Image 1: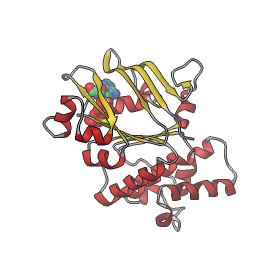
Image 2: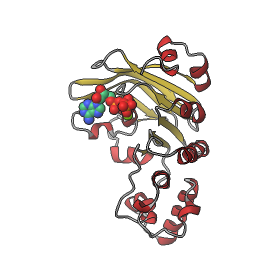
Image 3: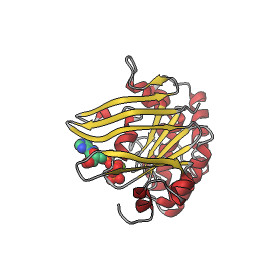
Image 4: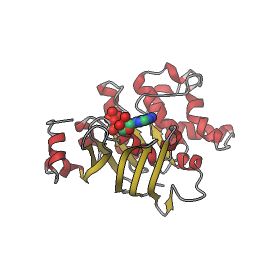
Length: 258
Ligand SMILES: Nc1ncnc2c1ncn2[C@@H]1O[C@H](COP(=O)(O)OP(=O)(O)OP(=O)(O)O)[C@@H](O)[C@H]1O
Ligand SMILES: [Mg+2]
């Protein structure tokens, strides 16, 4: 079930360094929001605060609120491991578990959650691989290592692994940056299908990609190196790319800096 993300007054630190400052935004369920902005402005950092991964980094600290529907992910008594199950993540480099088969990669999260019945796992593995548009390419090699797939296939395998545990939110940090154009389009199509079910946030440096896949676009920027990144503007993607409200957004999307 897709949930609404509602962030308010969020700061994230590495030790004493304030990396992102006072971020507030809402991401609607069953929509795709793209994060854009120059390198170092805190897109990945902010993304990782949305599933409590930021605090895994030594010195990583978060202030503020992230509501997932009615629940504050930073509230007392919240289990970060449960949060990470609910808010799935796909990384820039495809990272299938190298020693595991295609099947076991997809089933790994389910097994962690205590599901072991073969018939049940078979069903979810097939459904997830179909959901990730990978089934036809791997159905005859489910027991071969996941690391033997092409880069684009590995990335779809990672998406299958992420959706197998039925998260409510899917975070993607430059999921296509290591892929060829055809695999990239396959992933973009897939994102369009997945948003029927999930709330999706994608970080991308590719403006065309942001324009193609997202409903809303958030532009982040920093005043200078060493300054914290801030959310400059969040609006409908069409508007951000045609008629943004802030000059810095206009400059960035038209390639004048960044
Ligand atoms: N593990 C870390 N320890 C200390 N500082 C970090 C760490 N990771 C990131 N930072 C700093 O936090 C700031 C934001 O980094 P972040 O990786 O979130 O930027 P980004 O927008 O994702 O950049 P890119 O587009 O290059 O991926 C940068 O100044 C970066 O140097
Ligand atoms: Mg990044």
